[in-house]
Image (cartoon, rainbow over all chains, first blue to last red; front, side, top):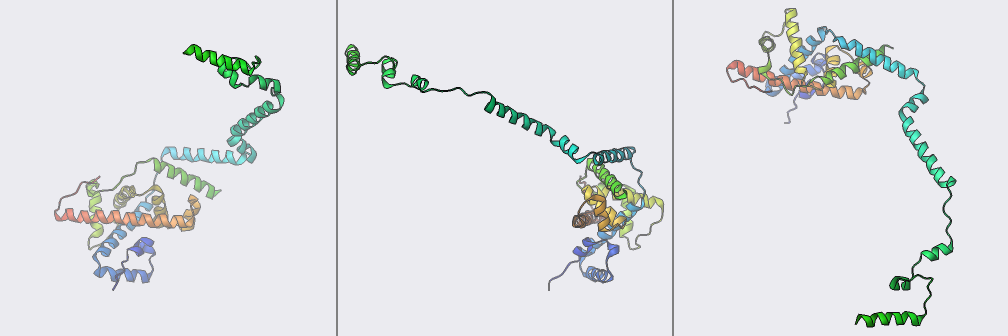
Length: 159
Length: 137
């Protein structure tokens, strides 16, 4: 038979709040179960300790009132400030920086003109195989024969 | 207004308690003679009969020390519900927690406190019988 221990009942509520039925179950069970009897005794002492602790009056530390009042004033100030103002306080820096960045980008795009490129400029910057090989610019037009003779003369000199 | 102030005071208390250092466990060796005697009286066959203001103060001091093993939120839930007979709803209103959270915290606190007390009582009995007192910290 499965033994159902009563520890769950002990932890679920304060001992003084146990119903008569629950108390009877506990009393019957602890007669035969040593571990639950020990748990019941501990719960009883704990319950008394908590009760005694609640009965004693605690003098709050001198800083307690100051702290409570500070929290109170802070909350009151927060309540009196309009919502938009509070939002601006928390996110104002971020919104400002985003606005400045957007304005700078818009100025770069629309106000400052982009450099106009022409086809002549493009051809000037392109390189042909001849210019690379012979170290000559595209403007110095060479005939096919001139190119061949230059290559072969260079080759013969190498030998 | 009252609820508002209660919430502020409760949160201030919790913040102050959080700054205090928690003890991992209370050992029999850490108890004073008065506290050991008080515990011995609890488990005796005569039973507990509060006799003087001094007894109450000893118990309150011991409770403070035993409660230090619990997180401050659990201490608060346990002291309000089991000590001051506050309802779960009242604790929820004072702390801003949900009612289920209050119940869970109280359950957990009761369990931890019972387990700590069980250890203390078992070791106390052993030391009374003549066994060595274990020094745990």
